[in-house]
Image 1 (cartoon, rainbow, N blue to C red):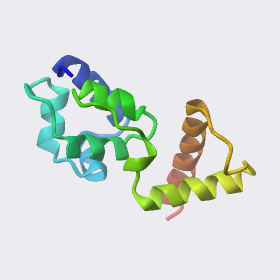
Image 2 (cartoon, rainbow, N blue to C red; image 1 turned 180 degrees about the vertical axis):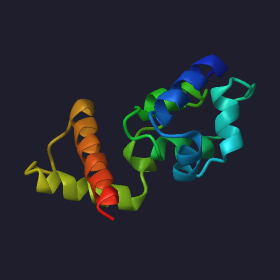
Image 3 (cartoon, rainbow, N blue to C red; image 1 turned 90 degrees about the vertical axis):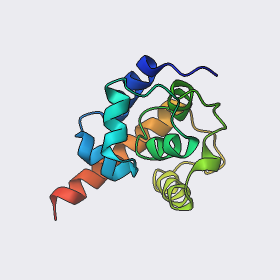
Length: 128
């Protein structure tokens, strides 16, 4: 799978969203210099698989498949790479939403629930 630094830069910008590079680096665990290299298209070789996983974990609204493909890595599926705490949170969200846990959710539904969860987290941060 070929690495295209222009496509990678665009996907990284989507992942960062309205956050600063410093904030995204802190949340993702990827150093700011690397994030800057990615955004400014100075990275000539594909990032490590570990780096891509960290970026995915910090970017729930950008599809993992899109991030992995832009990074030049094969996509290996979603739930297996999620940390256990994320699986538990998703399980609670599904239960609280009154959804049968055995129901397959569409990508749009998952994104909607993640967005709602992020809003709750932001509200909680503002109340501190």
